[in-house]
Image 1 (cartoon, helix red, strand yellow):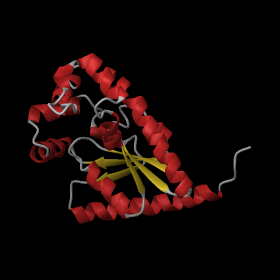
Image 2 (spheres, rainbow, N blue to C red; image 1 turned 120 degrees about the horizontal axis):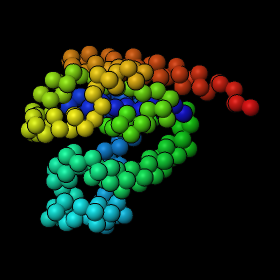
Image 3 (cartoon, rainbow, N blue to C red; image 1 turned 60 degrees about the vertical axis):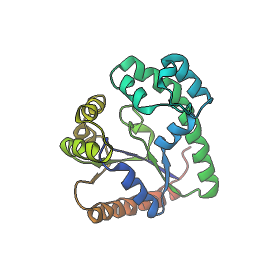
Amino acid sequence: MLIVGLTGGIGSGKSTVARMFKDEGAYVIDFDYLACLVVEPDKPAWRDIIDYFGPGVLSPDRTLNRSALAEIVFSDEKSRKALEGFTHPRIFQERDALINAIKRKDPSSIVIMDIPLLFELSLHKRFDKVILVYVPRVVQIKRATKRQGLAKEEVEKRLNAQIPIDEKRSLSDYIIDNKGSINETRDQVRKVIHGLGKLAKMKEVEPNCC
């Protein structure tokens, strides 16, 4: 099994690229989905968050008001660290369960882990390879304000809380430049998955360490 990290900043189009990898036969584990899963009402992480931040971060249906919570955590590092402490251990538990299930089903698979804050959490050394979906910062801001309906100031606040995307380039094994057309991006994804397939085959024949 080859386990690969996929990351990219807000507005980079990372989710679109993740779907392309899935179309090419890779298994994709979406950390955003797992993050939503572990904070469903009355789950342990949900209770920890309400105890810490108070009921003001709840919507009328008792789900988390993500906009209210984001406004807090992207303005205060202590609050952000607290939220990560409540959610990340539970997310990793869910991730491990999915990996084990995939391994039983397909031991020689390529697993793409879609993690927005991969470098910020210092997770990049845990993967066989790391893929960065790249667009310049100015494109990130333009896309996030247009597609996600966020104010420019809110996007910049989130970007400032993360490692600059240009710095992430030097830490990545593969760069998918996503500022062009959808077909150009798909061609890059196919080249990367082809290379990963070769690595997976090499890994299968590697002798076990003493």
